[in-house]
View 1 (cartoon, rainbow, N blue to C red):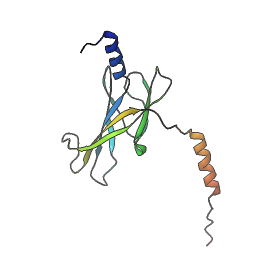
View 2: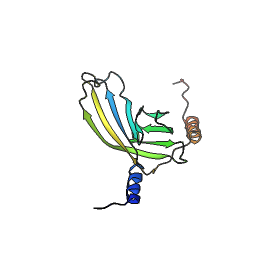
View 3: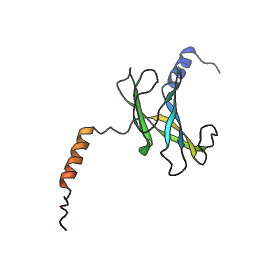
View 4: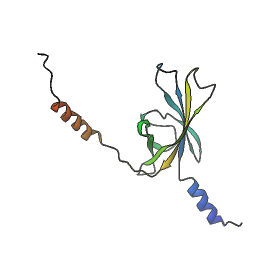
Length: 148
């Protein structure tokens, strides 16, 4: 089989388009605290970088990454690099309980999850409309007077 140099460049360029993340979630024994997903790894063409993959939006040490958000409830997240005007999305592709003796607590558990880049199919809800809805719901709720 013979490959041309342009064909090899196309294959190598497309191989770098999709990003992924691996997260080790450490959960203490039941009832002793929350699970910790701060042990994430985001590989790029320049190396593997640690990321805090706990719920929410935060910065990372990944060069050029200016936005990073994880939504564990929906098993999805998004990220954006400084040279891109669009967000890129990912979802959890797999998770597996693992026995990692140096990381997992006694009677606790460790879950390794892999996240893969996917086309974005959801929109972020702006904070203002949600706040307006919450205020409207509070106004409509009956007020208890304590005179029963």
